[in-house]
Length: 164
Image (cartoon, rainbow, N blue to C red):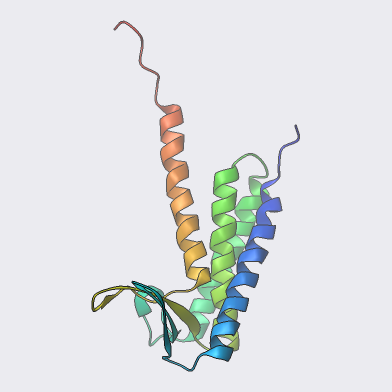
C-alpha cells in the first residue's frame, strides 16, 4: 500500500478554514455585536470580537503581530510536512488542524482587525472564554499532538518479560 504523504492532509486545513469563515460570516450577518442566543443549557451563541490572543490576552497588541505569528506558524507547519513526507498521520492531521485554525483567525485579523468569537460555554455565572471553529481546530490539533507523544512513548516502552 502506498504511503499517504503528509502534505495530502492540507485538504483538512482548507476545510477548517472554510467552515470557520462560513460560521463567522453567519454570526456577523445574523447577530448584532453582543447578541446572545441560548442553544442549550450551558451553551450560547454570542457574537463577540477578540482583538487579543486566547482569553483576550494581549488585546492591546496590533493585529499585525497576530497575523505574523499565524503566518510563521503556518510556514513552519508546511516545512515540517515537506521534510517529513510520510507516515506520521496523527501528527500530520494535528498540524493540518492547527494551521487551518491559525489561518482562519489570520483571515479575520486581516479583513476585520479582530477575530469573531461566538461559542460561549458557561456554568452558572461563570463563562469560559468565547471561541470559534478555528480555536476549536487548534485545540483539537494540540490534543492530537499530545496524544501522539503519549502513543510514541508507549510504543518505545519495552515489553515486560514473562516470568520475571
